[in-house]
Length: 248
Image 1 (spheres, one colour):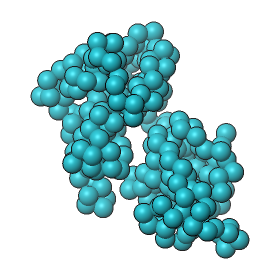
Image 2 (cartoon, one colour; image 1 turned 30 degrees about the vertical axis):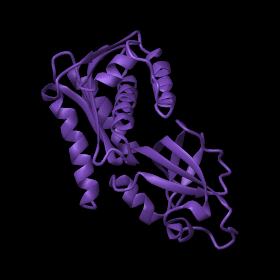
Image 3 (tube, rainbow, N blue to C red; image 1 turned 90 degrees about the vertical axis):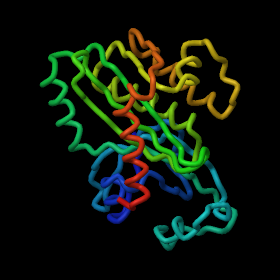
Image 4 (cartoon, rainbow, N blue to C red; image 1 turned 180 degrees about the horizontal axis):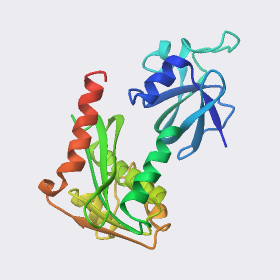
């Protein structure tokens, strides 16, 4: 499996949920979208995994804050304004958090076969600072897992789709075979049901990724609900955005 080493400062920010983006120079790992990468600390001990959810290849001259890239580079790494830089956004899972999640699943049911997934996304500015939120329930409406993910500057639709993708991946980790998806985005629901076409080419990659992911389940259904019924996922979106704005 691919690996990436983080210094103590960056690792602490990632583990605290304050950092969701990294810049990689001279990428010898050939990092790609949807890769799962083992995160090592400075002592080369594995502490968790990051899953790449967005990736852009830039030149150093085009990075908004070049100091973010340069300050952590080893002295022997030679760079110039044309040096390629991979900008990756990711979701981080700390290894010692996986066992409590599995234990929680066993506590609620001996075998989770079906879950309800409520997902939401929001962008303050559209495009603007955006986040995704999702909540997974068992069939007795007990919360099994919830999550929030800051995406940086993007659109409402990208955030909505990302919430669905990350929620489905969590459902897969829990061992669910069937997923009932509930979202207040008429666009996302109807595109996944095949009622609407995907005309926006920027949405097509994540739309296709979700369709492939859905094939890993026995059944996935999509239902549109009013925003009032999606309050828990919406709360995760706003909490994530507020935490980032406050520097938490």
